[in-house]
Image (cartoon, rainbow, N blue to C red; front, side):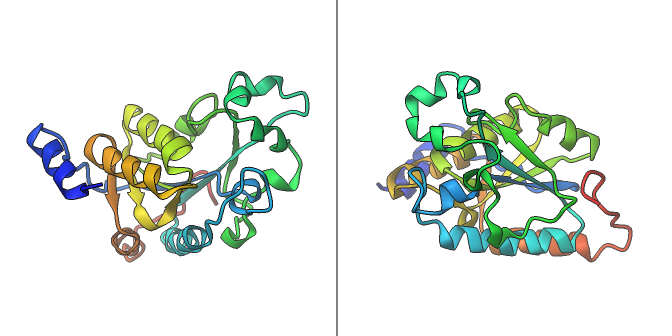
Length: 222
């Protein structure tokens, strides 16, 4: 894939603008849960590098008192709450509420005050109180990490933008099962939906917030 050629083609078509970082971010971690990050599970894949990069992102966010929200995908044992999604992804039958598969990856060290929301479909916003939580906290920027790039991360980024939040994707913190859809979706999202940036740029932004003396703890986090 000729990424630069495609990006230039998009640019000439009036896309590839920038939304930039706002003043009040939140970090949304999408589905970095055991059933997806542990290859021993049917839906699991090797995402060690991205999980560890996300831990760095979270450490920077915690130092800046940024709101952090975790998402998991989980169902009742009867699976009726999975709708038609279960037909497209039968492996979701292993994602049962209360089982280890739906727990946040321990390497991310989720803290007690960090909300964990359960979703049933791809977008972290659909059928969840995420938008209300972000709005109540005065958030204007949604920094998104997690998996998979071509599915739940993309759907979450799209809905973030459609809800009026600046969608930011630190490239080292999002993962997919295959490189081709990962790269294609990052390119497309960067052109139309979100800013795809480096982890270092994101950490520097969070550090600049942490340095502000008036920085208060996140409303829904502490």
